[in-house]
Amino acid sequence: MKRLVKPILVCFALYYFLPIIGTVLYASSTKWSKSILPQDLTLQWFRQLLSDSQFIAAVGRSLLLAVVVLLTILIVMIPTIIWIHLYYPRLNQWLEKLVLLPYALPGVILVTALLRTYAQTGIPMFVVLVGALFITALPIVYLGINNQMRLINLKELVDAASTLGAPMSTIVFRVLFPNIRIGTTLVSLMIFSSVFGEYMLTNLLIGGRFQTVRIYMFRRMNENGHLASAVMVLYLLFMVGIALATFFLTNRQKLSLKQPVEAKKPKKEVIKGGVTENVFRNT
Image 1 (cartoon, rainbow, N blue to C red):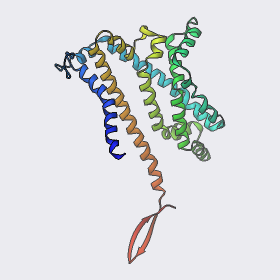
Image 2: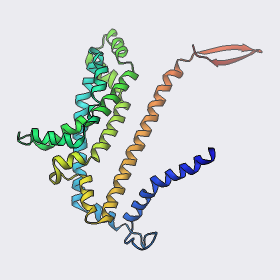
Image 3: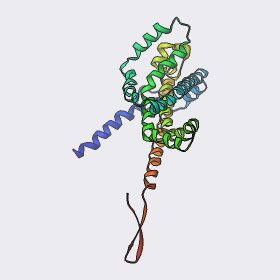
């Protein structure tokens, strides 16, 4: 069995990386049709893409949508989760199950319901789209921040600060927020990356009136495969950057959790053979 592990891993690596390598080569080639490798390499498509005003506008719209959705989620959900943990902890176990409902609701059904409900109300469809993305992001946001609240023992921190006479505003901004900063940043990166690359809801609710990066990419696939591949390469680099930032913050959080544990280990002196030795033991 051990001999089969490496060949299986190699097969999986080829399965995942060959399409990426092929996309990068196609985005960097002038022509690739009659040979295994491209006939010539060029950065023409990347230069053309970065000089395209429609692409720059699509990136701006995607950033705008991601920032608006992210700020809405953080402003609404963080105070709500804190309030639930402090005053209604029994609701938490029910809400953990309730927020998973978006996973059971197909996106097409959600879009159909939203169009039939809000199409004639005069509410801008951009606002409806932000609300729809807010709902679809609830599982990641609620469960991620909720686990962070449990990790820092929110109730004990608030009780200790209240005993010392700190007002609630000071507790929230100077005690709670610094302790959930890393976890909230991780959740924010995941939400930002998912909304930035969102396609289905944006295309079905707004379509060509609000062309994001993914809509631009699919339109270019029908016009020029090289440009579409260049968009995919740039989008992949953006996702890799988000993944690296998430990995860095996750390791940083683990290190911050290890430090208090190591600080609790007392320092004891043991005299052995006339030599004083420092020994660290768990109490």
